Length: 295
Image (cartoon, rainbow, N blue to C red; front, top):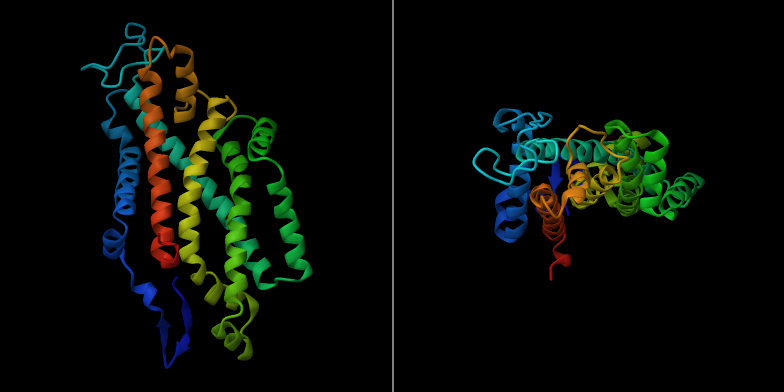
């Protein structure tokens, strides 16, 4: 795990683990590198979807209702005559956007409170923060999501808010645990001795040394958020129609599964592959940053 040390003689001492780069990740974790490439492909396809999709994801064709895959519609059409390929690519944009926004919001809140809680570990500040996190974790995830999403109503913004509550405790636990370790390091004690303020210590020495475990937990949580977003959309309280998302496409396809299985096959395959890729990347990053985890 990378460690940032105080400046000595005008330079910052850097632990050897910091010199690990992408090429070493490719050599040591080939499955993780492949997973990263798969994720990159999904991101690129989602970004250029308006340029490569043959039809609008909202365009309906009454003369091409539930057409099986063929030359005109490579992945077939749905019950309203909408092109499944176009909706799958646009669904990637929706699902990835919600996941990124969720992790950004939940990560910001969880990391800030985790760093503060870990630095003041054992005090009333730590106790208050952790009791709040325990309260969030005490409620089953699906119950919490259903309650918040139903209370706020179906929309992309409300879906992000609901999912953020799911990931805040995870970010908090990881950042707090690492901060409890970091605050005992010699360079933190040295910073305190020379009169550095608490915000400076947290910003200069706390956050940079949290990057490695946060990369790991973020990649693992990305898969969880993708599944949770799809579940909310499948239940009809996530992304509202007609906005395409993988979960909503699966929900719509479930009613036509016997006569038009392609409606569920392609968005389901995209969701499964992306979740698998994020899980493999998370495992690879964990082993890469912490060799003790290697089996």
